[in-house]
Image (cartoon, rainbow, N blue to C red; front, side, top):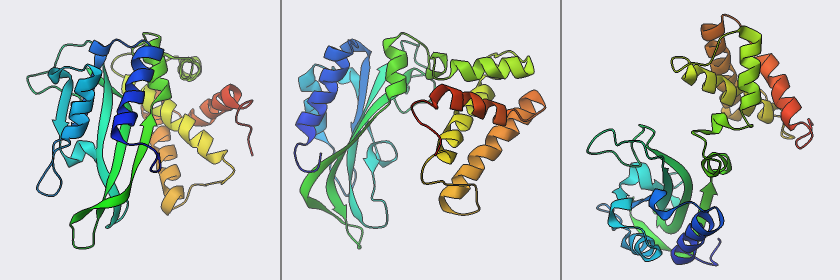
Length: 251
């Protein structure tokens, strides 16, 4: 939203889509809001709006800038607190401090609403923007997995063809010990296949966007060689093209 609506509408619409349209139980949700610091106060407004939607105090977590603040993109510019929405998988807490910021797997982030209401000035101070905006992002694949009661996106048809192809090419079964490498190879191969096939034609290089592509390719190949003893990334790229070629034709 570019000035059309702000926190109240954004939070209400997010909640409505998740609970009313996707039928996610309210007790399976957890959210985070900005706890405030010496420059910007705690986001009590977002907290109150989530409480208004019916979330209990125990479902709302306060975190600092590392978790619940976006921007600016440079030294100065628009920025603001965010509120992130998580799905509680039902796994037991890993400890007393376990929460959405923990990486134990209990909480899966599915949505993020960034409230662009501040400008960071050259002297490091913050002032209110004349226009309040919302920058939002939602994970379609994670929601798809949740709605279908799957443990992760890697159990969906988005990734299963790649996992099946990896086993067919190598004979190495997916196990808890090699699961991370399996996932890295799948995700990185799919990502670079899309990037290389994009009309912008970004290619591997030593600078900027091309450097990111190069790193993704090298990491996928490294894990492939370490796990399988050979590079199967080109073969997996063919599978990605076969999966998505009709929707995203190569340029």
